[in-house]
Image (cartoon, protein in one colour):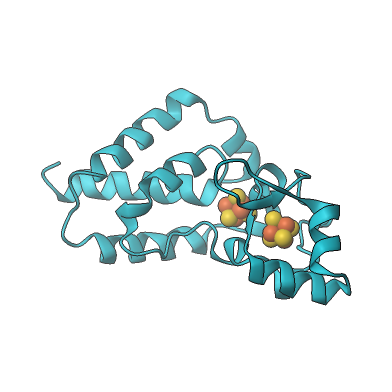
Length: 167
Ligand code: SF4
Ligand code: SF4
């Protein structure tokens, strides 16, 4: 699914996928790790992040202390100067986030200009490999609004689980 098609998806289209993830909070097929691994591999075979970059355009990563130190050193800045220039501290969580959305490190070619030293949150996005998968249902529910890869994976999981299990 390309970004244009994804952006045309409505709340109505996302509703059954969100309901599926909610149900997955309580009922988890025993083969879930295998099903996720298989469907995720198939999904990535037909997904091109470089033609999308929606996560970098519409969301902000969380920057850990280690991320700030590594990236600021890479850019030849102090951690303090880096935070002052690009980040703010979120109230409540105390997490460091981007002031600018889209991300200041996103190039016009959808490439990340600090790819080798990017935040761990970016490197792990969209978190499909996290174990157990269902403990990240809230994250996936939120990301259904932003990430075509997550949308596609949850769509595949729903189809397969409903076909193979009493659900
Ligand atoms: S991870 Fe998701 S939102 Fe980010 S570029 Fe890939 S498909 Fe797009
Ligand atoms: S640091 Fe790179 S990968 Fe992370 S949001 Fe910014 S452009 Fe995207």
